Amino acid sequence: MPKTKKRMTKQRKKILEVLKSTDTHPTADWIYEQVKKDIPNISLGTVYRNLNVLSEMGEIQVLEYGSNYSRYDGNPDDHYHFCCQGCDAVADIDLNVKEKLNEEVEKQTSFRVFTHRTEFYGLCEECQKNHNDLNTD
Ligand code: ZN
Ligand code: MN
Image 1 (tube, helix red, strand yellow):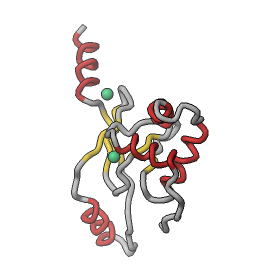
Image 2: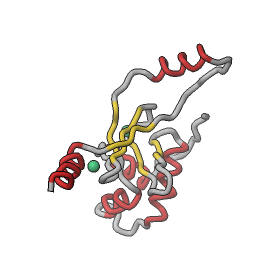
Image 3: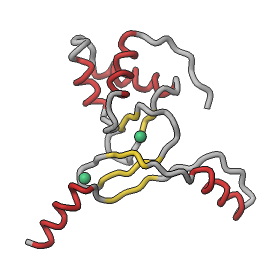
Image 4: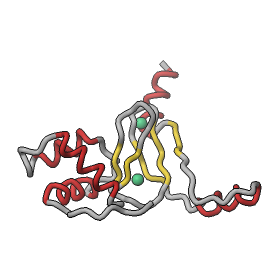
């Protein structure tokens, strides 16, 4: 997708800085709370708008999980994610199979594959403990 050329405003720069400082894939609300510490008069709407612009600029990724709130990723490179169904945590998965999977599909079909989207779902370590507690009580 072609990247939109847009000015890097002060607000945009701050939002990007906040997002790049964490690997928790936060919500817009969380980013808003952090940015507000530096820019107290910023609105949540402005944060949303700028997150969309940053995504169009190719600086960040918007991760959409069905009916849940969108999560934002300061790493714009294509990579996999694990979503905890217990606490909604989103973690990076370092798997070097993207090209391989695309090729595999091309081998089995007549399609030309450019990319694919795959999400991993389950329970994080913390939620597995809670899950076990429930079962053993
Ligand atoms: Zn969890
Ligand atoms: Mn990520």
